[in-house]
Image 1: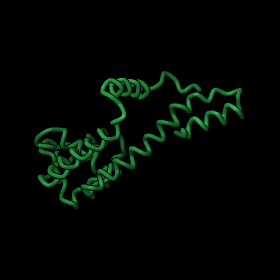
Image 2: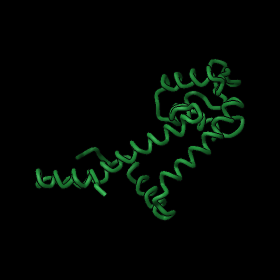
Image 3: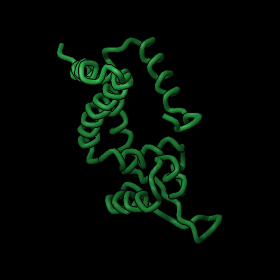
Length: 165
């Protein structure tokens, strides 16, 4: 198998032997895997008329439990996007009948977002397909390898002590 990242590492080793290019072995492969996985997951979402952003919103509502209601702020915080981006997503989902918005019973100035019955059906179907796709993407790893990789990625996901290079 021709490993493009290995080729890049050898080239840098030849051209700049004074530099340690070893982080590229991890970062380069992560970037390639993320790109390939994103493309495959996008196709999976598309089978249900969704994109990844719509899936994220519907999934957040669904996993919140009955009655499947969250504030736009909670939706925005859970998906790490701006409130304006969340508002655009919600407008699209509401126009498709997948969510509804209603004033909060606690504070009438606030609106809450609720998953509709149709939205619940779609996210339940999409989730099944999504998980099948994720299992297929990870089929080259056994259970132990998946656990180790998940733990290592969680460690990488922690905020660094400093941004010093």
